[in-house]
Length: 528
Image (cartoon, rainbow, N blue to C red; front, side, top):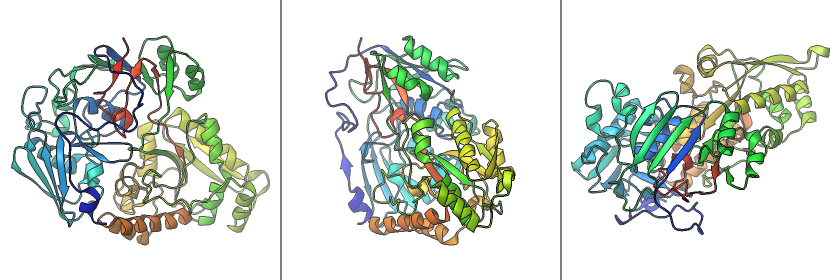
C-alpha cells in the first residue's frame, strides 16, 4: 500500500475538531469558567518543547503552542493548525493547507513562515527533530497558508510527528535575533493555543490564562490553569487528598489504592501511547562476561517481570514483550522475546556459558546503575536480589541524572542499567536509537547504551526508515525484532505509567489526544 493510499487527503471544517475517541461518551455538557490547579513533581526547563521535548516541558508547552496536527487513540491524524494535507505518490512531498484567521497571542498573524521556521529549526537543533526531519530537503511556502515539505528520501513516520508537543509551531519573529536556544519565547511563550502564558515563578508555579480569541469557537472552557511544582510525592498525595489541587501527577504509586477509595477522587492510569515509555534492563556489551549472549539470556530468565509490574508498580504497569509498542500493531511481533521467569534455566545457561558457582563468591559481579526515580531504584533493588539467587553479585551505584547519563553514555562505568526510554510514535524515531551502532562512534544520551553493533540490524533500520510500502516496512521491523530478541542487548521490562495521575471527579475531559497529558486542555472543564 502506497503512502498516498494510507494518508490520502483529510479536511475538517473550521467549526471544530473530531471528537477524541478516548473521551467518555456520557460526559455532561461542559460548564465554563474556573481555575484548574495541577501538581507536578518536576519543574520544566522550558515552556516550549521546540528544543527539549522532556515530559515536563511538552505538557505545558502544548497548552500554549500548537502543532499542525493532533491524533486520536488509533494514531489517526486530525486537523489542528493544518486543515488539509496530502502526500505525493513517491512520499517526497507533504503539502499542508493552514488554518486561516489564526492569531498568535500577541495579535500577529499565524502564517506559513512560522511553520517553515519551526520545522527547519527543529531539524537543526531539536533533540528529536534531527531524526524526524533528517530527510528534509526544503520547506516551500508558495503563499501565506500553504506549506510543502520536500524530502530527499521518504519519511513514512512524518505525519505522526507533528503534534503540538513534538513539533510546536512558534512565531518566527520571536526568534529573529541571536541564539534560538536563548530566546525569551522559550520561557515566556507566545503561541496560538487555547491558553496564554501569564507568569512563571521559578521553584513555585506557572500560570496560564484563557485565550479569549482562540480560533476554536467556544473553547477553552477553563479561565485559568496553574501548574504547581512539588518535589516530594508524599506531599503531592497529601495536597490532592486535602483538596488543594484538582489534578496531581507524580503521585507515589504506593498511595494510589488509598486515594482511589476517596469518593471525591479518581485515579487515571491510562498509558501514554505517543511516548510509550518503557523500563529496560540494558547490558553493557563491552563487559566480556555480558558479551556472551547466553549470559544475557540467563539474566533475562532470572528476572521476574511480572513481579516488577505487580509489586514494584502495584499492578499499574504491564509486562513488555518487545521494544516496538503493541499499539503499532502492523509492526509488532513479540515471538522472539520469550524470556519467562525460570531460575532453573537461568542457572543452567550460566553453567553452559562457563560461569559455574564458586562457593559463597558466586559466579561473577556486576555494577548496576539506574535512572534517578524511586520506582526505578526499587526495580534495581529487585534485580539485584533476583540475580543474587542465581549466583550473580550486583552492586548498585546511585547518582543524579547528569551522573547517570555521564556514567552510561560517556564514561561507560556500568555493567547493567535500569533505564527509562520512550519508544515513541514510530520505530524509526523511538526504537532505532536503542540499537543504532552510530551511537558507538557518536555517543549521545539515550542512544544505544549497550553499544550493540549488528550491521544487519543497522541495514534493516536504514531500509525501514524510507520504505513507503506498509507491508514491506512491517516485514523489516519484524525481522529486526527477531534478531534483537535473540541477541538481547536490552531486555524490555514493564511499561512506565508516565501519565499516571489523580484528579477530582469534578474534572472532566482532561485528555483530548493520544499523548494524554500533552493535550491542550481546550476541552477540559470543571463542575462548579
